[in-house]
Image 1 (tube, rainbow, N blue to C red):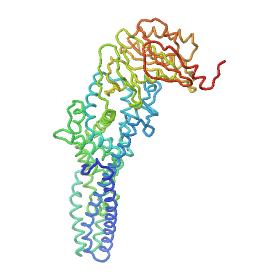
Image 2 (image 1 turned 90 degrees about the vertical axis):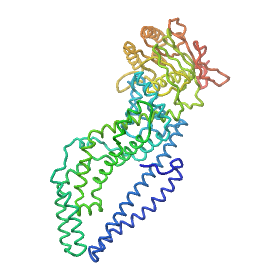
Image 3 (image 1 turned 45 degrees about the vertical axis):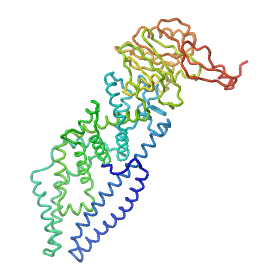
Image 4 (image 1 turned 180 degrees about the horizontal axis):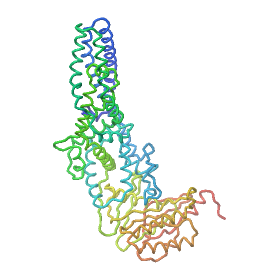
Length: 584
């Protein structure tokens, strides 16, 4: 599709386009009934009138092409408006309208279930600009994966450059939204691609004879040189001749990709062919679509045309031409030629487009959020963040915090009153580590980290189906953490309300034992607790941090700022009073 209109004023252009579509619909209807009238009059009364069928049918075909082009433009403009509206909702953190990716939630995953990567008001809703099922799945896997530092660095450079291509990002997503509506499984198509060539050498005979003799019979009938009976006989012969190619064309028609898929792929290919990149990763992904000797858009546009012909063979206009000129042979010949030329490319194109959907999602997120902080990847096992924020909170209302866990410091013991921000802070650190791994900029002024595997234990619930209590679920989670901490790569762990499912005495004893066990590994992390007794322990490498609250009359105030040292006071007693519990 050529963008020969002002998409920067989509509302105005959309109104003009809709008016043109309405006018063209009437014209197309008039031409269709004119063709019917020509056939009826020509066959029953004035035969020379049949000559008018061809110019009128050409006008009809041209009107269809123009109509379809305008409908595509209309769909694209609507998609532009939809993308702009969705971006505004994301900016306001109004995410309820977006796909939650709930099927990607996995409570057994090392961290995704605890960090709101999926589900209601999740990072997936904020990141996801993909339009296909496979692109969506690939993005989810990228969010859940462990990424080597080299890949994260390469991805960061690619995302930063791509985020500057604002028109490219907008058009890429809009094309998908406009045309990729109901995806059709392509397994059958890929199987058909690898089938043997259905074109037989003797098919060249009807390929040549059909149009030549058909035109002669039609002309002779119209001019009165032969009776209409001969014309009917030719149609019967055509029906027999076309039966040779009926089966392969029907088989191809059943597996052809959806029209919307092909329009989207063609548009994406043209976009990629029209943009230049400096980044090596982007150039590598662009190369299968476009190089100096090959353009995927040409092949995809050709497939779109072949697919249209194959899938619209029952159209009345096509049937008339087919029985007269045996056009099925032309269609099969062109289809098999296309298959032979592009057999090795097609599946790879779709895989490539899926990767571009992920990159476009991450780059669009970067552009909208204006995040350009590079991650400093260190060889030491450190983590340091300046003015770090949670991406799911409104940026202008989110309270930033500084945090550092340096050499010799193994564990932060985080205490604080209820609702003071402990859990949110831990998720802030975790989700920014996820962003950094994906090659995205953290929500911070500066962010440096060593090479860690992330592990969390924050939402451990009971399961009736598995006969598992919440305490046992937490112990099972901690067992996985200990197993992972003993692996080659160090772990950065986030443990919220440690061992909360048991009594105070056992909880303090168990927590101290776990802290000492984790200290003996190469891992680091944050452990939150309400047990102030743990803060009194003098353990080497264990640092005390806290969040505070202030009570004024019947109001509890929070500043949501992390501070060094244990929490000096807690608010549970006051909260219970405010909820109506009376103390003697």
